[in-house]
Every structure is written in structure tokens, then in C-alpha cells.
Length: 241
Image (cartoon, rainbow, N blue to C red; front, side):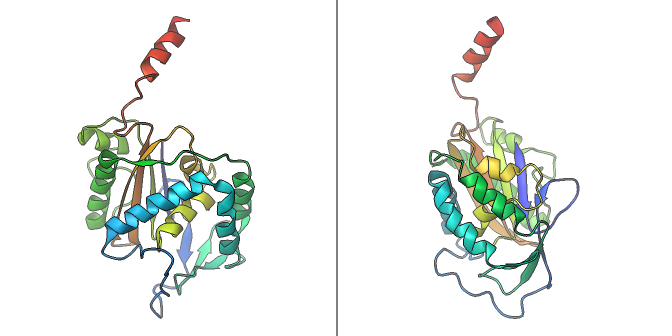
């Protein structure tokens, strides 16, 4: 499963969308003192904060409603001005997906925390490194490698769920993009964030020449993306019946 969230829609991919109304800020973004700056050179710190934000949402989905309520208050029609930015963005759906997310979160039970997985982080980092240089977007590498194939090249397996955020201002914004999932018909990012079977994650963040930032999260049921030990026997037993 691969899903993308970013501020511009391209190609045939289903992407969350926030389009800037201005090409550049007329003043520096207001500092966010509550979370590490996602655009700072210390991306390792930002990556840890992204994973922490992801796990906080999974641990207590209902508590995340407060964040979404505050976010909704920044809207005027389909326009939103994020607290960490002086730029106004136009969304595809306005506040509708926020209201939908709030209703969804009311039904979601707490999920286990995703444990940091070095191999998944390495696979995610490979993708960030390439797109930071090339300016490409999407889940496939320039050579056609998929998220699972990147994990396999690191010695893991192909059972990887990947989500990508482009243009987020800080770790909280990364996770908010996924949960709101503006412009994505099947809300694939939201489903991935709260997937019950996932247990491990690797996060890599960095600069992007077109969208300022990129953050890749590779998630799996095992630390290396291989099939769980109990999958194949279960499948064989099913076939035998």
C-alpha cells in the first residue's frame, strides 16, 4: 500500500492538496515553539518528532480531535492559513474532510505504538535522498523501484506501507495532512495512520527543491518488512481446508 500527501496534485496519483495562493511568503514563517522546526538542518530530530506525533495520534485518536478543531478555525471557505506560515493555501474540499476525520476518530480504538525500525528508516532515507536531489515526487524511484523493493535492497522484505508528505511545516503538520487527507477519495493516508496490523516504522525527512520539505514514512508489520512468521502457515492451512 502506498499513499502520498502533499501540497500540489500531480499525475494520476490520489494526493492530499493544499495549493499556495502566493508564490512566497512576504515575511518569515512565525516560529513554532511547540515542536522542532521541520525545515531545520537537524532532520534527525524532526524524524523522531514525526514518529512521536504519529504514535500520539494512534494512542489516543479522540484526543487528536482538539488539534483538528483548532486547524478548522484557520479556514475561510476552502482557504486556510497555517499558524506556522504567512502563506494562505487553497484546499480541495475545505472543512469537509476535517469534519469527516473528527467523526472517524470518534470510532477508532487506540492503536499500538509503532516501534522505530532502522531498516525501514534506511529505505525511506534512500527515497528522500534521491528526491531531494532530483525534485521528483511519488513512491517510485527513478529506476522504477517500489517502496518494497527499496526495503528489499536494504536486506528486508516487500511488505511495506509507505506514506509521503511534501511541503509540511513541522512534524504535527505531517501527521495532520495524513489524517485530514484532503482531496483523497479513499482517505488512504488516514487508513494507513490507524492501520491496526502495523507495528514498525522508519521515518526520513529532508529538503525538497520544489516543495521545500519531504517526509517519507515506511511502515510494516515486522521490523524489516518481511512477512510475519505466522502468515505462511495460516495461508497453507486455509488452502488445505
